[in-house]
Image (cartoon, rainbow, N blue to C red; front, side, top):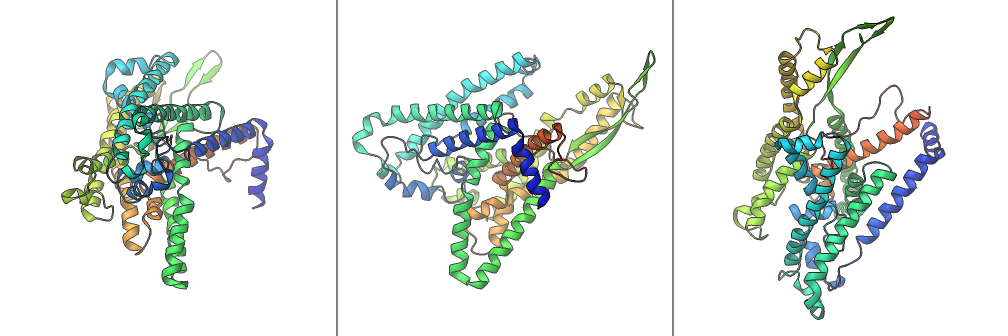
Length: 448
């Protein structure tokens, strides 16, 4: 405890780090404040139907979780940062699949600036389409009661403009946090939106357990909290898990100096694809609900209930398939082998060039399979936990896995890594004792 307090004092004593933390907190406060500002033309006291529609499983509940409840509040930040995330994912896939775009990305700072500018333009287009879909959802019979009739003539135009401006403002907040604050701004905004639901979800679970079982309910709640801690620790191992491939560098004598000859390791991540397979799988499973007009009737109901075994099997298969697919897209063993050869590096017992690429590719395939299985387990864990702990509230169960928990763990690790770097640069002890060091997340889109 004493070491922890000393670490906090060291963090606060660094003026640059202190200003970054304060700047980040101020911008996050502005974001949370804006999520409670309701769109013009909507009566906030009649949003019960909209709130209820996002409490069940499905993509609407996931979107509402990412924007901190702004979607169900019909806020000016109802779409949040998600259009920018969609545009970033699309641009990342384009730069991988289209050679011309890959060349632009390799142009250095100018190339990255071009891609970032194109991503912003695409964000505006995506936001306009999503705003139009959101207006249609607000005008549906279930939610139409919240609309103010006198404002009907201006509602469509003002809502599209405000939602688009709101998304661009949130995107600007994320960029400012990245530039002058602490951590990746876009990721922190998503994490804050997810964490904003935790107190309410915990209170709902507390009320449910204490009302039903008394002392027995409290014991079940303690077991749920204990299991949540175990899940978080396991997910940290999955995010940071790497396979270290030994690499030697040839010695070079230049004059009286010797260069190279060092031994190093090539870290290959067990979960190189990050959160992307889960996002793709959820998008695929959202299609049946979308095609049936959000009615969740017929065969579509199997893909909206995360406790259904059909949902779990299809979801797990999609996550495993997308893990291999996305890892193959972002991981290039040949390029890695060429870089080693160019820097006079080699893997002991393996010939440089094609043999090295094949060797790295084989190792990556072997560690990707268990990583994909564990990632699929993380995705279906909320449903399994809800089945295991009978009576658990859905909102609390979502924190046991899926996209929300994976993003939270990754962002927190990334932010702690930046704090530790600042401490070590100034010769303070890091956040971890003993030689262990934190590693940030990988495989999450550049926008996240």
